[in-house]
Length: 337
Length: 176
Ligand SMILES: Cc1cc2nc3c(=O)[nH]c(=O)nc-3n(C[C@H](O)[C@H](O)[C@H](O)COP(=O)(O)OP(=O)(O)OC[C@H]3O[C@@H](n4cnc5c(N)ncnc54)[C@H](O)[C@@H]3O)c2cc1C
Ligand code: SF4
Ligand code: FES
Ligand code: FES
Image (tube, rainbow over all chains, first blue to last red; front, side, top):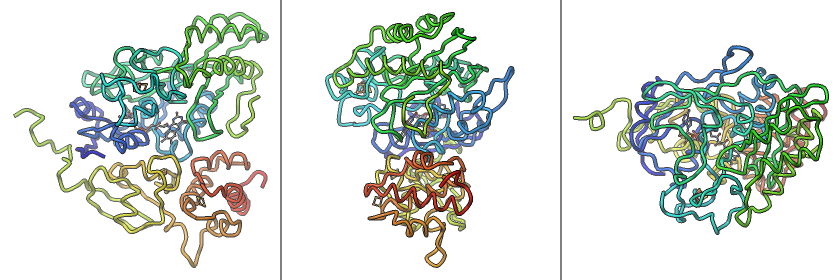
């Protein structure tokens, strides 16, 4: 690990001011940034410890919504009764990620801002446009089993690795941030970005900005939701492909559908036009396949990850079936319904 | 002088005399000055002579370094000690003593739940955390919620037996 200065501010204003300095990075749970610092993939000059900031609560908001403090641990969020009753999709997505130990340490703000698991991003002996802009991309033409099939660029084909964020995308969450110029609110779909010609930026957070909370409006989908995650082993592994689905169903008719994919792009992937194909329709496998095709329009593998396109298609169809039947994928039982 | 070159008393410089940190470890209070890059795992093993907590991967991938921080199990290899000022830490040395084993330590012996023993302190601390959390009600849930502890000797079946046994003793298992 490089040698760095350290600060633990007590106010958000102080933290924002410190984080605006060049070379400053935030630390919350530490489960991602400490790992990357050990590899030399992150080399902050100043580490700003956010843990003393007053962002440790889950608060009620109007109309049955919740505001999830940035420093609340992932585990406490998933097991909070209000979260597990009102947003079971989010609770399950969180519990499908990492391990019990990591979820106890990891925070909501850290989960949003965790960096890609691309092997080349971690390995400072190899080129990587995200870590060292302009050095090239080791994954294009290299080992890329875990990489993206949608929204890639010539510069970077990394994925965003979070499970939690896939559910937050489906739930139309909002990210509250505080910076040197005050507070602003970012729609979840606009928070993470595609790599384009600047893969060094994972998201739209500006220098000095801190995530303070994640806000959720009530979305009542009854039992018609699921988080289906496929990975190389049955637990404690990142998603190869995952899907978060929340449906509002009236009798035999789908009223509203929300579908977000994980493991396939630089951000959770949603295609609202594809979701609209389900509105007002009766559930049907052929329709599900059409929706899956629409979501995956333009998907392209890079060699090792070619399988993801067909896998994603099947995962979407399977998960839509689970959500319609009201039989969400459980975490402990590894069989897929 | 600009703000950047001024000495800022909010910031501990890397070449300073360390960051003041107070930690209570296995009931004993330690007032320390630490470099900010010291992990809790290295602090325990290298400075406080508590080598029971093991270093497997040093990257959050194996669980050998699991300790309880304020009662919650975490990977001490990914915790910078300075970030946990004021915390209470329990390591395997604090769970039981050779004369008074923790029920999990006894159950691991009874069920032959290890071979080389390298993952065992982490497994036992993790199991203590699991029981404290109270979320596992079946063997499948125990397996899932213990997945953060890798055992390269493959003692998983006996580890699950040992944990089920202790949960049954404490009346916590739905079906043993
Ligand atoms: C072995 C392993 C397996 C894992 N498996 C999974 C998995 O299957 N699914 C999954 O989703 N995740 C997984 N994770 C990742 C884990 O979820 C993240 O490491 C964790 O959520 C990060 O949270 P943290 O609080 O520890 O962040 P930190 O490590 O403290 O910070 C991460 C990043 O976020 C920034 N940051 C932190 N808080 C804020 C804030 N409030 N505002 C602005 N920036 C901030 C930091 O500067 C840093 O860049 C795994 C991790 C490991 C080590
Ligand atoms: S895919 Fe992105 S993160 Fe990975 S090596 Fe290429 S540029 Fe770096
Ligand atoms: S040594 Fe910490 S998880 Fe492996
Ligand atoms: S007993 Fe050897 S690694 Fe678990």
